[in-house]
Length: 287
Image (cartoon, rainbow, N blue to C red):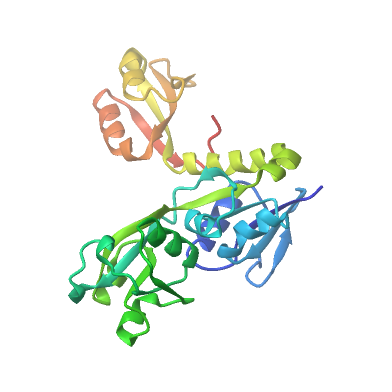
């Protein structure tokens, strides 16, 4: 049976999600901007382009088998689903924010009867109920930051990444409801039916994320400095050592190194006489 994967059709998670799928080897075709779904070439897989907030509900209903969305959307949905992989992008948090002139420094100071504007009504209600607060939740679909200025609400609950938008609108955070990032989610029933296919996709995406933090380094090292080179670039399971044709004094050393250590590693290799040093990106890295 064909596996169905839901991805955000637009918004903050769309571009990076498509990039990860393509880098993982899934052929989505060239013109996907207006398509509602695509059949992945040479795979028993369909990718559905839907709203990020709808993905948890679609998985729970069995309409799709897995999806990529924010953990905030999963929490808001209230569905008990499986987080198969955190994707390390789309970081944000759902926060309570108040006007700077309100004098409020903590969400616990918000009084009963206050009006809270948000596009996350379920999480907002649960949060204030857990604090014993009786507030009025006003559902909005966007631009929550302007609601206090318009007099529609007293305070807001909204997603925050850098906090610059809040500052521009003279708002400040006084409480965090949930931390979020993009994730691959699925259900227990989907895993029971498609466990192998789902795990293959998860592993493929994971290999891309791991690879982006690494570089492949190659260098010609003096043979008598090989022990020092191995200490500088231990690699994943030790560096690969190859003979250099026509030059018995050198060996070729290949290794995977952390991207943030490339500068230091190259300088250390130069000190022991390495030459012909080359680094290249890695598309996927499977452990």
